[in-house]
Length: 351
Image (cartoon, rainbow, N blue to C red):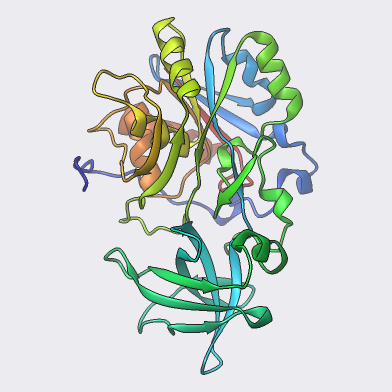
């Protein structure tokens, strides 16, 4: 159940096609950590342009970065209905050994589009004699379904052979699953990459640690991100360890900043927070929606990508900056040609 109301206004803007990153930075002749980074300081409302490789300059000894170590799975698969209709299926969230929340999509040339109109076919054939059955709609919007998979082996093993990374129309050619992994990922499960962490390299992490900046993990396996502007995020499984909760509390009690790497980390930590603004160990599902009205309790700053107009992620960013300051940041990013989406540039929000 939602316990907060939404802001009266969401950030809206026009995103030029030219600013939609269509390939990884490595294909543009850059290292991962050479992407651009806009830095917004909430207290002074000042904004400065930088690059991600300079991140250590903006953090202090004692600050704590919280990362999501979930790895990306090849969650897009081909399916064929009994009448021969070709579909793409995006696996979103695993419910148990055989059941997943999935999104059926129409095949549209080199990419896919959401299934609209009549209900999608229920009984689907997959490669190698595998099968998938759409059992019932998930939620009240009809876009996602609960599906039973009959693969004959573990899902992740089958996907490693037959799946591919989810790709939307702005990415013009396929890229290997390695292009969608963060360097610190260690537990596969995300339908789409927790992409705020993509610019990190082992060398940059070493520099941060040498400066005294802490790094600690949570796990949140992300679902599909193809939400319409009026859709709030679906429930997701979260795991915040006792060690991470203790490190978050110790940092804040010591007067240091807790910086979430990605909106998934904000959601995880805020789900773990009690009313006294202390993080607690947490292992379960959360449907929390972070908005300006709710605010944030245990997170001070955020490293994130650039989000589509009116998306639910922007509601969370308003909790850090407010609508006016957020609009200023997006106006500057647009005017300076920052790149959007998982292969694009990043935004660092500091107190």
